[in-house]
Length: 248
Image (cartoon, rainbow, N blue to C red; front, side, top):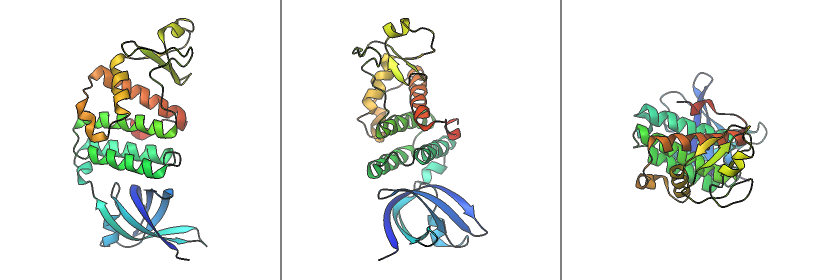
């Protein structure tokens, strides 16, 4: 039985290992998150290929005795150099990578999760500062759907009433679910933040868009703040912590 497996993979993180090696954390369509070692000095072609956010076909050798893996070959299909050309792009890409790692690859549907991650990074490569934030909000919202925790923005979680799209909804991290104005009035002791009609419309539209289609839908600064607060609150509740990379 061959000890070398071939993966469709995206490198999420790299870290020096010893004097000349490197550990990499990769997201694969076949087995989710894996860790492998890249051997070779600074002049190694394989080492230069094994950089964060490169993706393609990867050959990994598995040693079952040591339960360790090493990168044998890497056919890079997407290099994404633009992610390194703007601070906001680089920080957003790091935040996406940490979200994937912290949530263990999205709960098991790795092929769909990997496709979402790669499409998001592709759209991010040419994004300006403001659009980086929009792309990150989009990613968190879609990632919440993959984890099965995306909030229902059409119905009150407490009374089940359907809320028309022109009305505000409200969210509390204590309940981890959106509620209507009437239910807030009966439980006013908790702190809620607003989900405006504009925020609801944008997130409902984003649920069926690809990242490169986001420019079709405008987002003012107020809507952006609300959507960012909501998506980060939803994911924080699921992950049990707020990743440090989100605060860029």
